[in-house]
Length: 222
Ligand SMILES: *Cc1c(COP(=O)(O)O)cnc(C)c1O
Image (cartoon, rainbow, N blue to C red):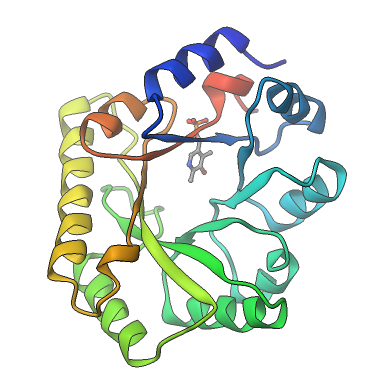
């Protein structure tokens, strides 16, 4: 069961500057179709097998976002259809995405995942890793894997001041990369993916232009 009221309210709140990725992981295709019928086209999934099965069953104009932790050896399974890979955190993974995108004669857009939370379980790059990866990417230009922005997840905490600081920090890194533009791709860095059900309003206030929302739309996951 989807929450139509929440969907309409969120679409309203986001306006036309912020993209909603509806996070449908663990939810049945019927729920995705119900949201699709209301006009939603961007959906996010965390697992390779699940996103592949859903892609096969659902309308082909859905834009599929891979938002989980992607292993290099699984890139080939999603390379033919994925719209945006949010969680890239190594040059090795980027290289594999480039290779598989080329095989499929397409470009795959990617976001670099930056570690902004305090929890140890969160994947991602720190500021230094990010700069290193950016300069490696510059030295080894990839024509089929295209970095178009950053993604981050704030700490899971009630302390919204802390969450806000983490988002603010990610926005600062994003702006730095765009303006100092060490590898002349600043103009292609357009997406800042941050904000989930519990914190998307704060994320928007701090400059997010893509939010990934699951439970508010589809209900709690088990
Ligand atoms: C599950 C997930 C979300 C959505 O979380 P909700 O709290 O249900 O909105 C967003 N981003 C990532 C990376 C996720 O894994």
